[in-house]
Image (cartoon, rainbow, N blue to C red; front, side, top):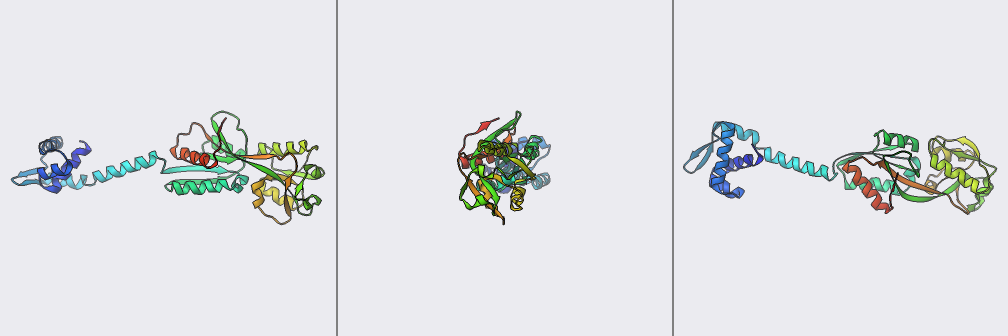
Length: 301
């Protein structure tokens, strides 16, 4: 039994006439009659009484009608559901991001635009440090992550650098260097450097330490902060200074000053990473929209 048999049966049942039913569905009357006979043969009982001016449902035909009347609508709904899934308009996607990535204006914009374009896709967001994000990505607990890491060791991860942002110095507001609009990192050589652990964010850690060395001094590592947000609070407590991506200047805190850096300014790159073997259409749409918004070439790792 095929769906077309159901449609032919319903047309005859509703019209009460083979000729009118044939005209309604766009086939000849003889082929329609043959299809109905084939259906009756398969079921093993007559579905219509042939009467002089048309056709009437038998008792078996009425019982059959009550069950199959919704089949065409169900089939159409199934087709539309499959088409929506095929376009990535339904499903779910789990996206992670670092605290500093959240301050980059493009990241919230990507989330907002994707939700508007694909309202049927459930998006779950999770904030964590870079090491946790990479682990969650590899263990398939997240589908994509925004992080400030230039490379991810191992195969199976695709990495796209989507923006490059200068770092700025964050220092206590009462620090003598804070009187200037721009500062030399060498002016901070005697201050403790506050960072998150290297295991949490190796790229950021290495870039900050390298920037200090390029400025002619070996930084004195001070208080370790669990995350970049804590770095700002520790600076406000006058425990030292740090370097952070410029978008983090949106995080205003009493007792801190953000200042541009003279000379070679270290750059913080924001990257999008996901598993290269992930075939989710929702993920493909998310990546495509993210890259289109930033118009950046991708880097395979």
